Amino acid sequence: MNMLPISPRPFFADKNKAFWRLQLLGWGGAFVFRSATTIANERPLDFLITVLITAIAGFSISTVLSVIYSNLINRRPLITWTFTAVVLLMAVGVSAFINAWTLDVYQGGAESSFLQLMLGVAYIDMTLLGAWSALYYAINFFLQVEQQADRLERLETQATSAQLAMLRYQLNPHFLFNTLNSISTLVLLGETKPANAMLTRLSSFLRHTLVNTPGGKVTVAQEVETLKLYLDIERMRFEERLRTDFEIGERAARGCIPSFLLQPLIENAIKYGVSAQEEGARISLSAHVIGNMLRMIVSDTGPGLQGAQRNAESLVHTPSSTGVGLANIRDRLAQAYGENSRFEIETPPDGGFTVIIELPFEPAEAEQEQQGRAKLPRASRVSHSPAATGNAQPNESDGETVPAPRTGANA
Image (cartoon, rainbow, N blue to C red; front, side, top):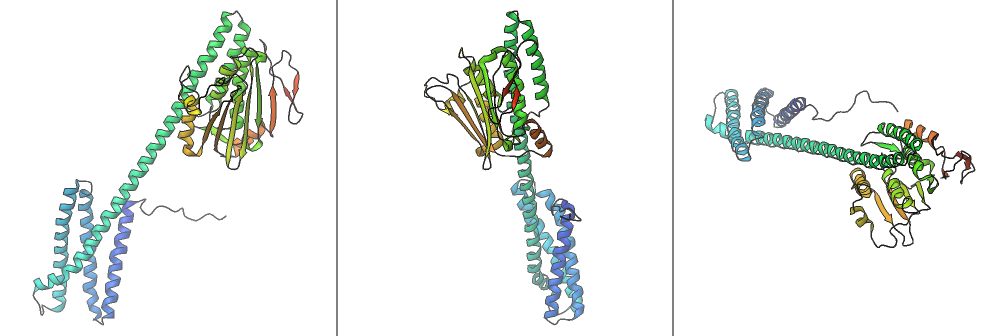
């Protein structure tokens, strides 16, 4: 496609230039119209001189009015409209005087008195200058409303970005508190090597998350990589009790989501699913594109709510130990997508806990797509089950081998 030789700009991008263009167009049009009327009425061509003087007088007087109106437009309404009426009447008087004098000179001091001549042309001047004044205020009020709307939109965007950043920053101390508490427990138990390994992985995890902009977005593939780093840390503590299952579609891997969106769900699943049962639990994450929506489901096989009848809304408003989690995710989705997102919780009576998130599918840019393909080349269903040895495990979907996560001091 050929590019335009010029880039289009709004007409009022330069208000000063737009004003002079409208002035020339308006009074030039008035001169052409009155000239055509003169010729149609078969008046002498030299009468066009008086028409030209009338147009020049109108152009000059309206230019002076623009200076006065620009100082009145932001005053209190009573002052604005009172002084506008007075100034407009004075301008009409000056214009009528100039036009009457021009006609009087052209006619050679003729039939009627000068005052009658002034009153005869005043209605034309009142119509032209009154319409010009109304148009001047209408355009400037419209521009002010547009500027205020743009300013309000920018403020709302900044507020949304700040809110998203604040919600994102809430997760850092929440995660650090739990992880450092686990490391402290290992140290107290004398397990210094696992504690050192956990610190190393914590450092890698934090270095990975620092790359992401707090209010920005990442691909699902990148979010999954971050989750795997986090799960490697928790697997040091829970070992075979923590089992994970990822099912990420190829298109879904390239979809963009708010950074760190899924980590609180995985953290809650560990806290209320894995920790709550001696045998641990399986945490599952699936992501697929359905129509134009990206659906992500996080579930665990923990005890759930043990038959308690509580809906999703009450769960969201029930604070956790640090006051973040489900409410944080709900607020972030509301800030980023409004009513175009879905956030539901399913709590079967026989146990388990499932969170369903749907949001508009936004494919990543070319660079992110390449990263997504490198990390998750195709849809897979990988089950991670820790083992004491480093043997490979079969992929449940297509027979690929995936290295099992290592545990212990050398992990």
